[in-house]
Image 1 (cartoon, rainbow over the protein chains, first blue to last red):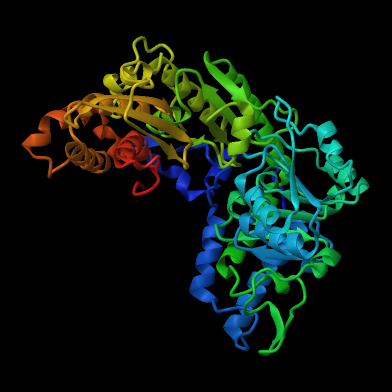
Image 2: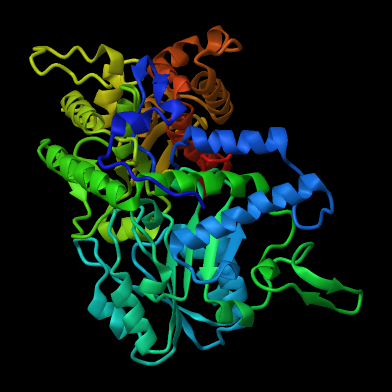
Length: 414
Length: 170
């Protein structure tokens, strides 16, 4: 790795120059992109890295005995090193590359859920999970008789720790699979407390860190968790690549998920044996270009630094909460103390979809709907919210533009 | 950098917001005339858009000749879907099932493309009434909001209990 120089101050104007798409106009207005939590925009470094790979050194990885394949393998495997460094994993073999975080969570539900957990045991999720961290466990429950328990959240949108701990009383919980940051409410869950409680009761912990990894430094050794999953495209990287970190001794106990090339040690019609971790879980041609792009994204994020990113996003969130709360008829959904760069809201007399379309008409991209979290919506007594989410390139002026546009929407629907 | 709206601007014309949200849509979305359950009905069906969470139920009462006498609905959704349900309820009154299906096909075409070249003189009058919704064609993600109540209505006419608008819509 090259030495990384961190800028002393967070220069958002300079950062914006790194994202070519931000010069686009939408419906005749400058793009105000407040939908980064769904998928973030890509810096030129990522675009260039993927294009350069395709133009100068591309071949399939791992099995090639020729120059191009060796160079591509090096570049792709460098992503695994960058990810290990990013998460402070002690061993690069603990980084499993998947197609997405959904792929990672399904790997866990299949491999850990069917290979390690026993019928009669329970999996705990929270009341603010994305569908991707609900449905794989439901499928496991229905197939294997593994109970699914849901830890409730408070009205503020925080994990109810007392109720969470109560779920462990009968000793049946084998795994906690829980978000590290809600994609709807922005709430950051108390990871260390969750791990302490789960481990005290003999359960392992898997975090869905798809949102969290964008907003703060993830140190899996400090967190003390057992598994941590996230996706590349929210961290300014390409789509089509996800990450599962797991403790090596646990990954080694897990059977493979998908079968195919690259995940075997040897194959005969009678019997096949599996490759070592992480390759045991990486059947087929991997997301080569996506890995190369993700490494560039990680380098980019590291060059800005998580401290600077977190401080910038805290400023944006504080500003958004104060500006949006001041608009008559706007209600902020989720009031967690510890939160990342996501703000959900509703407007009385206007459905979230109408709000989103009217913002779009003014060049502002937000998301509206149930955000793939229908059970959470029901808990909140809502059908949908509008959600503004922030990235490294988001400016205070864009938050002001959102507030001004919402004021107009409010007037329009009066 | 985005320009803020100048606060001093006295009367906001909202011209830029009206291409989709015409006054009739805002009005119907707020105060639908037919937004009620029919106690006396012949068929009913629910429409559900799993992508966005919009839900609608439609009740239909037929006249003795098989034409639609009344349509009522209960919609949980955006202004577009509620206004569309209301305009639909009004427009299909007095039509038989065949007419209603033809009208839906024409309406769907208009919602998707903004025009309906195949809509002959027979459909000119009802299509005129539904025309305020033609603006959705510029917003592909919203087309299904406008068509959801129609899917529910057609499901009711077909004797199906459930419809989803995700099917066949972008």
